Length: 218
Ligand SMILES: *[C@@H]1O[C@H](CO)[C@@H](O)[C@H](O)[C@H]1NC(C)=O
Ligand SMILES: *[C@@H]1O[C@H](CO)[C@@H](O)[C@H](O)[C@H]1NC(C)=O
Image 1 (cartoon, rainbow, N blue to C red):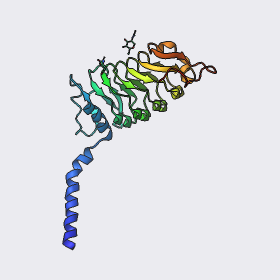
Image 2: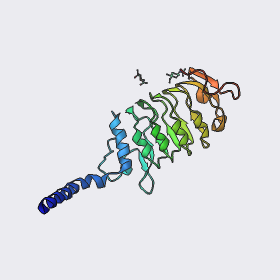
Image 3: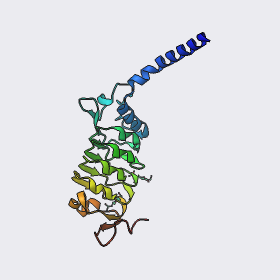
Image 4: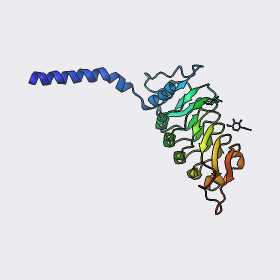
């Protein structure tokens, strides 16, 4: 009986020793970025340096880290990437700049991006993204630049986005959004230019006359 227990113990000790290298090299932020690499086609090999066996992603091209080796920037604008965004990107807690404009990304904007507490700039313009603008983006309290123009986004502009006090630039033009657009809070400083060429968008929300949630969206 005792020998049997000992053998079991030995088995588990050896097993965990065998697994140890993969566990110790795991870096959650590297894993999150690598999930993006796996989800996209990269004909120009701009992600070639993204080696998931390195201790962190800070030496990868197009990735910038802070002094604690946490990712602060992802600069992949105009990189000929096609494929989808991944929810794992929402784990990059210190990310300030998510620059993925002018690629050929399809699918929807993951609601998980609302978890990017430090985000200052979300640039997804000129892709081929579909689906709604996630209301969870209203949690990005540091956001200054939100450029989603030139996609095929549908649905209403979430009214919750008016809570984004620091928002300086908003561009959701050239999409397929519907309903009215909010004019209160952070949105009071944006002109119609931010919203143009959304053929089903009816115009500004008329406070006291037309309720935000009526009309224009099927
Ligand atoms: C966007 O996606 C649609 C449907 O998948 C495709 O027909 C179209 O060519 C794409 N547009 C661009 C600019 O890639
Ligand atoms: C309007 O937006 C759509 C979708 O992005 C785009 O394909 C089209 O070229 C835009 N039209 C104009 C006049 O800008």
